[in-house]
Length: 371
Image (tube, rainbow, N blue to C red; front, side):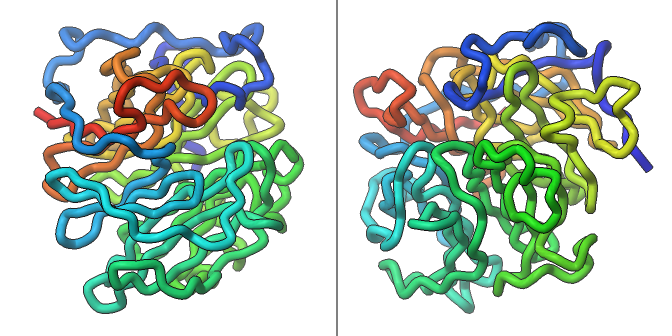
């Protein structure tokens, strides 16, 4: 059954990485469903308020993704090709440079995930742009970078829209967000790995129960860069829009999310067969990369919007009105993950990516306590 999305009487926020929109200024792109401005804290009773961020680590070079090890330290990818380890009390040590990374445009060393059975297998997974494709590899981590084993290859690559987020779901399968690389036809082509969310086994094979017998879980995406599950095992994803609307989508098996035929909410005459976003923003206010779930809310890191969006969720997975946090204080925000303690978030800045204005100490990792 098709779910109902929140449209004209619902919420607003924003997303878009500067330069990922074909509209130079963003905005509403000439019409379509709009939503009211985000509400303030006082209008959202019961919503957890984040505390004052503190800087955990500085001097990083475009930290793109964060994945925690069992001891509470984290592995962090830098888009240029380096993998570093950041201690839970701070301190950065280099793990190693990943061979074969081509850091061009928005490509490079992107996602990282730690095996759910890391205590036994010591496996770390990476998504990166190589000479001819985007790919997912894994290696055995013993303090350094071991031999890379490709598990998914042939993901389309381009100067932009490479996707790149990877995460293990509560089902133990690996989920992979990919982009359309500005070849919009790929998003609707179920034979392509571009413009999709993929679901694979830890070995990279199509996961049992996938809707089409392939690695494809959902399709019709433009550029997926955030994945998060709530306490009820529901999956959400952030997606870059083009001229009008960035999105948060609730991801459901086999669904078509409409790109390139639809941006944002589908007009009534074009609605059949497409799943509308759960929430949309104008492209001038966000640029959603990382996404996390914690303390009853989704948290979306905004690049162009230079803020952390808090989106309350109820027990049924319905969204409340989004609240902007730390607007303009830290510049572009790239990754956001829930820390192992469940009471804080780690957030990375992305001011050294060629589109921001680096500040002293950038790029950095911030720790945001949750009330």
